[in-house]
Image 1 (cartoon, rainbow, N blue to C red):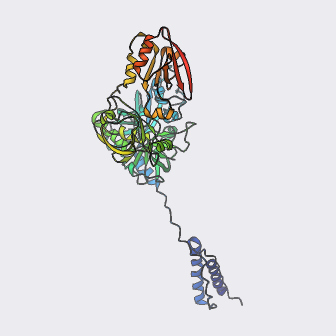
Image 2 (tube, rainbow, N blue to C red):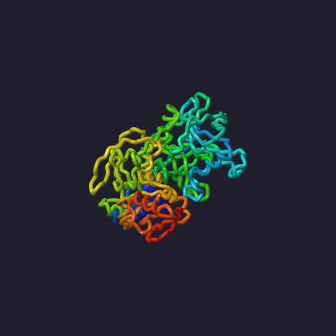
Image 3 (cartoon, helix red, strand yellow):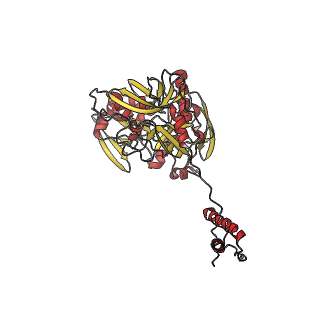
Length: 510
């Protein structure tokens, strides 16, 4: 008669030996083998079994069990801290809609979609008929007495702002203040004992970390979406903010809502998306909460926001520049122009300097410099590590107020005031070539045309051209141009270098 128990034990042992020989016992397979052996051991205790056969040594070491990855509990964050997220509705004029759609950007600009006002499609873009325009966004409560954070572009130019809480109560909100540079706005509603979203520290975020967004995309209130941090300190064109980039699904209506970390703390304000369609395409940008809190505190204490400036125009360093200036790596920003009388000039900075660090923080791109400076306060002293003449030098500068109008450079001022009737009619704004521009272009002498108007513009002169000579006379200064034009009769012949080409352009001045 067949012994079923013995068969079970032998089968299990053979399975174990086969797995050992293959060197694959471990993890789930190992657990399966152990379970079978446990059954076999119990069965063998009751039924005799043949003597065990020694197992051969495995050919390779068994791999360690894989680490277990635990996903965050988003349900807890959504249920608890989601109560502090609000829906914002605004009513404005057609003028509000136009500013909200494209704040200082041309529709052809690649980041045009970043700043779209989230409008009711029935009223958007009516071309100025005066019809009311409705907008929508999100926000979150940061104080139990009704202080709310959102985006500046959500409430920009709004005539009426309404805040709707998750318990469906609605309040008329007051815009305490907003800052277009950082896209942060502070609202206030007349309420008490409201749920508050706890604030975290965005500087502790790391790429790959899970994050959660709550908002009202397309008016769908309390919508929860999740993803990971794609990058931190992301600088966008003309930006003043080191954005948090994520792959969290953000759509029109999410703007102004909170970005939570896995501890349920707000680490950012969802602000912008990159999109060619107007909807989510995997690139979302949030304002770090550390930045937003600084702006909020200024607005609440003074009613306005102050930003600092250094007073320089800079450009990025590429490998060619790095090789030219003897840098080990293409990091830093090259000063192309220094504002006359500005903080940089007073500190001794000059064209051709390369800023590598600010207060010990690496400056890799122009965005690093602009965000660090802009988020400082006027009057602050900063320490700059500057690469000059093949070595690092330390330069201290006192930052100025960004709201102050920059003084025009010497070249522009002299060209604008002119030296006579004919000089004024030429219509050119000129400045000397910088040393670095001479090296790059190979032009030994000339003046950069920063602006062309009037007679010069009609003749075909363009900003960015280099004026090499006037009536056959080489020019290197504004005085030379002014004198040559003053001696001319009805027209002048301007030799222009445009790219690699040189052309004469006649300009009538009489």
